[in-house]
Amino acid sequence: MQILNDLISTLNGIVWGPLMLILILGTGLYLMYGLTFMPLRRIVSSFKLLWQSREKKGEGDIAPFNALMTSLSATIGTGNIAGVATAIFLGGPGALFWMWCTALVGMATKYAEAVLAVKYREVDNKGNHIGGPMFYIKNGLKSHWAWLGTCFALFGAFAGFGIGNTIQANSVADVLNNTFAIPHMLTGIIMAVLAALVLVGGIKRIAGVAGKLVPFMATAYVLSGLIILIINYQSVPPALALIFTHAFTPAAATGGFAGAAVWAAIRFGVARGIFSNEAGLGSAPIAHAAASTDSPVQQGRIAMLGTFIDTIIICSITGLVIISTGAWSQGETGASLSSAAFELALPGIGGYIVAIGLSIFAFTTILGWSFYSEKCVEYLLGERAITPFRVLWIIAVPIGATASLDFIWLVADTLNALMAIPNLIALILLSPVVFKLTKEHFNKQ
Image (cartoon, rainbow, N blue to C red; front, top):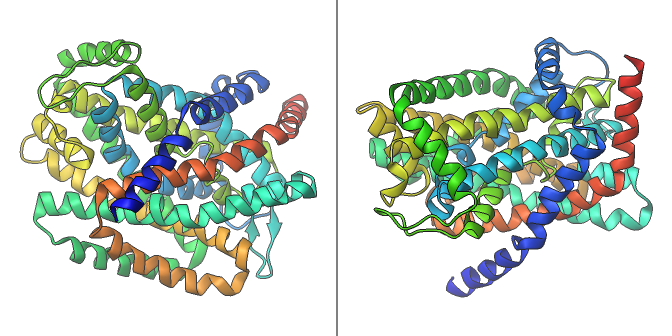
């Protein structure tokens, strides 16, 4: 086990090195510039568009609104609670600043992913609309790039068992054990049964559940965080000062915090930011490809809001609560750190808010990622592989609930990077298509 851990640690250091961070942020900046900052300029009107997209219009399987909710069900998970806490524990308060930077440029990345997903999607033998990086690589690039789509599907199939399954189950089991003394295995079994009941219905049932659970829980969590920040309003300006200061200067050791260099703030801020909002991973466009729309640009505008909601709103709430309460320097990490921060601010109920919020967020992530990985497996092996995949997916939930958290985070981080590389290459190569479609769309208005 130690040998495997060392091997993955070495690979993680390579794939999350300076070149990877430059590729992620550089791709986002390039796309944002090529789009003349449209994602930021049209964010208000895009929220109006989202509200108007609750009904199905055009070809597709689910309403554009529910496509975003499915995407958010997969992105709003432990990354927003445990991931933010881990970033701050390892990189200091400055890590939150780099999460923000990743999200802002990531809006352009997420937009481009969804535009290409709708543009190059296909219809399978059952009449379902399918798409994502493997399809826009296959249909948008020349045949000698086909291997890139296969690589993405391969990494996506395995990555789901890390980022979208075992790590979610592990974090829920951990926080429920700490808060309610529920055994890890019992949590895993219950989540596996609930997930199985939903997965039988495919994308339509997943989207239906996500369309109800995600808006409710996200709103409840954000309101709870805002109440804490209002109660501790005097601590918010110093917290913001710490975030901006330590984004560019080392964070010294204090209390239970071991200290962190600026590189750590950047590395863990970007890595956890990508883990949380998934901009550049290529996962979200798999959900957006199923949207009932005839306009790739319209769906792209809806898709980019996922990054804003996930990181700029929800992750910021978690991070500001952790820093403003002083919990970040007490030596806790992961979901336990977030729980400790909320409990400090709201004694008696804060820990319950985090436990319930993380449980629902993580459960919907397991549902959303099951669809992503399933489509990757289907691309590689055909429709006959769907049922065996679903069985393996359900079995992995209780296994993840009882596994080592540190090892799971390491594997998930590594798989994220391996999954992102072929997708980012494809986005750069297909960027002229994105720019052309966007220009044509807005010229018609």
